[in-house]
Amino acid sequence: MQQVRAVVSLRRGEPVSIATINVPDPGPGEALVKVQACGVCHTDLHYREGGINDDFPFLLGHEAAGVVEAVGPDVTSVAVGDFVVLNWRAVCGSCRACDRGEPWYCFATHNATQKMTLEDGTELSPALGIGAFAEKTLVAAGQCTKVDPSARAAAVGLLGCGVMAGIGAAINTGQATRGKSVAVIGCGGVGVAAVAGAQLAGASPIIAVDIDAKKLEAATRMGATHTVDSSATDPVAAIQELTGGFGADIVIEAVGRPETWKQAFYARDLAGTVVLVGVPTPDMTMPDIPLIDVFGRGGSLKSSWYGDCLPSRDFPMLVDLYQQGRLDLDAFVTEEIALDDVEAAFGRMHEGNVLRSVVVL
Ligand code: APR
Ligand code: ZN
Ligand code: ZN
Image (tube, rainbow, N blue to C red; front, side):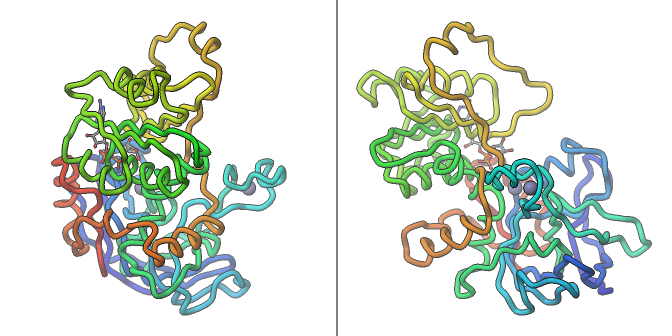
């Protein structure tokens, strides 16, 4: 067992605090990771607000990269010294999704079996089964994805959640390719990553929509060919106009609200695809849309969980593209902060200037 510093959320709605936590030595199927960098994601804030579940205290942080420090007795997939990005989809290989060859939908993903605790022995709930706002964290070995060790930890760690969600929404879920038009509604960290994914896939045009002009600038830097300020312009009409009057082949909703999902639905060409990657709250319901429109327009209405990614396939590939200068992951790192600054970073999240604050250890 080791003791390390970590960011914990003890009670609903209260500011997070720094605590000393106990991290067990890795047992069978587990790995101990020395965390080098971990991004601050909205989901961490949702945990602290009690919006995910009531299993306080939480050990926050889940968009991380680091180095494997120790592995359990039977672990062969990673070894001590490996540079890894942590993932929250350690596929089981034997559930019904894995069995039919679609492991990116795995329904029985792995987490560490042993619990990290507060000093008094109270068990912690690690955010998304990771808990990486900590000097060291214990995860399932399958949650460690080996990538090019020369890559910058603060940048590639972001593939562990939000950036992968956005890129995957475009490429994996939306199936963006050359010859397809893409519109992205909501250009925070996730939406801008969707723009970057659409660009990587060769889609054109790529239309970025937001109510905040600063977000549209970021989207343009990441590959948007056109922008629409939907606080001033009807985004459905604007997207249609930019696509020959038809609508985009793929419309990605990266806000997580019924009204923007409805915009996505109607901004889509016939037989097009809507991808919902923004996370709605439990009180939200489907917008009122005539069923004949759902039928008549054809196509597909999908949601994208973690960008439908397969970490072992997608992380090393995207890190290589980053290393080659073809995917600007550095652009997502707005600031590097210390472990003690997570609460302040939550406060800055909604000011609109930050794509990601990243804790660097
Ligand atoms: N129309 C267009 N854009 C909007 C609207 C709207 N009505 N309302 C908000 N936005 C924009 C915001 O201006 C912001 O740029 O949506 C963006 C949301 O971005 P962030 O708050 O930075 O969130 P992000 O990290 O990108 O996550 C997006 O996915 O993971 C989930 O919980 C997360 O639901 C959130 C979504
Ligand atoms: Zn499975
Ligand atoms: Zn996240």
